[in-house]
Length: 261
Image (cartoon, rainbow, N blue to C red; front, top):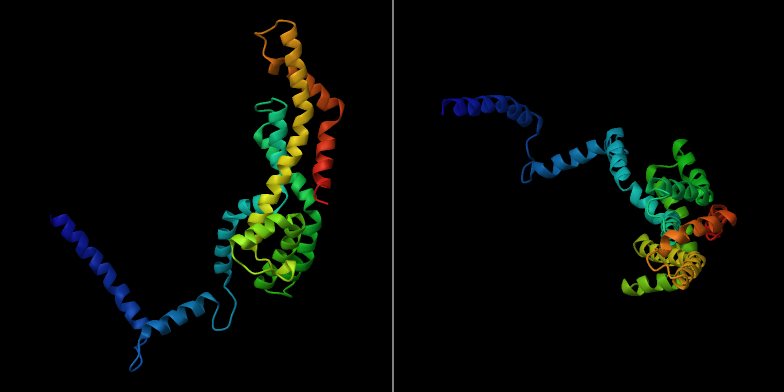
């Protein structure tokens, strides 16, 4: 019982100088008013680097670290990454391969092919946002707005009008006079819906030749009376041979890059 009392007394003695220092730092409240709004104003002014100033470096770093947590989602939802990765996954399923190529290889291929597809947009972002901001010609808000405009233009070109109209009706928003007026809250789900629809269309076209091989192998095994032999095991080498003979990876990469126009 004595030890907890001593601990509480020590904490009280430690807190008394800090409390006295804090009371000495806070100016007295004006007559008929409160010191809380003034203290809050001074606190926000210090966070912004003083009255009328920009954000301090520490606050900018904190915001940047917070944005880095949602960067994978931005890469996944605002670029060509979704369509490419879904097509790669469908291709692996159509060929009957379970873990080859591995997920890490498919994600790496999708990422670098996305960089290739997005290179014109990234060059414009560098010219209109990153380079002027690094030179001190524009502030951070203008840089973010310029970069967002370039991604907005890319997403609008890849979004179907029917998908965009559906989300505009769901949001109960009036018609927009210009494509630039469409907010990201409507454009983003419409863009992802269009990308998934396009990816499944490409995946359907990829599935057809491999499905024909499965049907031929299955019919051949049935006619030979080999009921216990799995058609997937026999058809897999023929699928790989067909894919290699037609130079499938080059055709697939080129077709995916050309599908973005």
